[in-house]
Image (tube, rainbow, N blue to C red; front, side, top):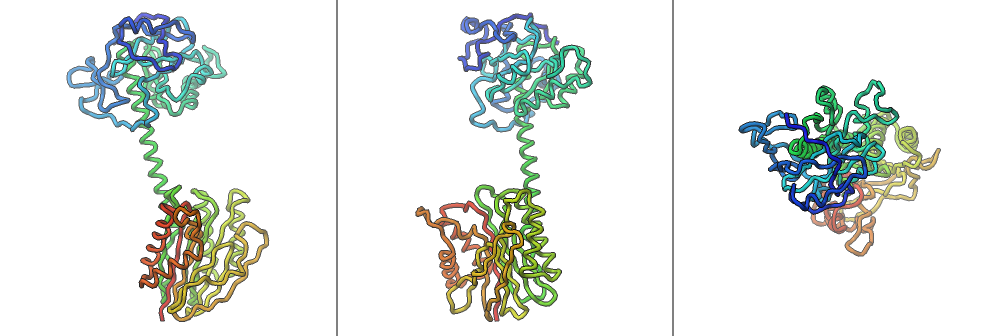
Amino acid sequence: MSVPVPRQRAIPAAESGQAQAAPQAGGPAAEADREPSTGGGRGPVSADAPADGTAMPHGSGTPDDRSAGPGRSASPHGAGVPDGLAVPVAPAPADAAPANLTLLVIEDDPAGSPIVPEMLDSAGRPIRLRTARNLTEAGRLLTDDVHCILLDLALPAPGRSAGDGGEDELAVLRHVLELAPRHAVLALTASGDAERGAEAVRVGAQDYLLRDELDGRLLSRAIRYAVERKRSDTAERRLTESKLRAQENARLERGLLPTPLLEGSSLRFAARYRPGRSRALLGGDFYDTVRTPDGTVHAMIGDVCGHGPDEAALGVELRIAWRALTLAGLCGDQLLSTLQQVLEHERDNDEIFATLCTVDIAPDGRRAGLCLAGHPAPLIARPGRTPELLPYDNNGPALGLLPRARWPRTQVELGAEWNLMLYTDGLIEGHVGDTGERLGQEGMLALVRHRLDQGLSGEELLRTTVDEVRDLNGGELTDDVAVVLLNRTS
């Protein structure tokens, strides 16, 4: 057990939060930099507190604490850690690593307890101090340059006076953790109350200290340990969140980009999806293709306005509903009217809408019915003819915009051989170079015609077309791109 350091009333001038030069501990400059506290805190009292040789916040590995014995390094509570065992260190943001560590002490006794001795970082620089007598005062001092909080667990929680017999002895800690979720927290408790300190760690503190065991070496080391553990915990939490997002995106991908049901059909199917650069994840674009028992092939592509998991989830619901309704025998206006009802019930606000294009291709493959709900018309390419857009004069409103809307079904002739391409507007809204001009449908038609002249087809045709659109845009497109290609040969 360390020898308690006598209490004094001085704290470093750095309590104001302003950066100070790093004088040598115990020297004249260090004495000159001390001034009386105006916030009821305690000052450094040990001019000869030894400097710990290694810093965890700005380095790696574990500190060298001679009190731990040969070949061991001590934790703030004396738990040995083998030398050479690296503590996981999360990389600190470039703007979050000032020259000096800053400690905020929250304690309401201005007479001198807890003991806050002089503390040095690994480079011999003083650890800056700020003191607060209550949580309101702490809230004002809790800025981004504070790295660690030393909290006296005897401090009364908000709404409770000291000595109240409340059930939650750690209410003040819970309040601080809520107030400062990104800061490391050290809990300070009485020497005979180690159980309470351990419970504080279980609640969320990075470590606990016993009041009568404080000295400069132990406290400065505990601060660095707590800061580094908080960084490590934060990095681990972010990694876990990233894995969960990846799993969720995989589930959404299976829902948005399904395997087509075309068994028994002579048509060939290909699809391409590229997320917008703002997310690098799935958005609200979706598609599907199924063959019903009568031999008709139904294809669909759609786009929910907005981006994010809610829009993607709504796209999944609309796609699944479309497949179920199609297999049940609905098509055209009846199908789209029902989908609009699904959208109206499932969206979280009335401003959400979705565009949709559906095509039902007759069993002989020569004719098709087309319905457009605020969506760009498909492209059709036939041998010996210039690629063109299918008729779009009967384009109805997007789903969710107008109640009791109607969507006419247009009959189109396809011919014996053709490529039919359905796409979302992300394909045509990219720019062409630095001119600010959009590619548009005419530009898309020219790109596809050029690729067809090169003899490309299927997935290769889609891949090269989408890649060229991206290159013309000068980088990743801002919106998601989904493309479906159906091909029939005689």
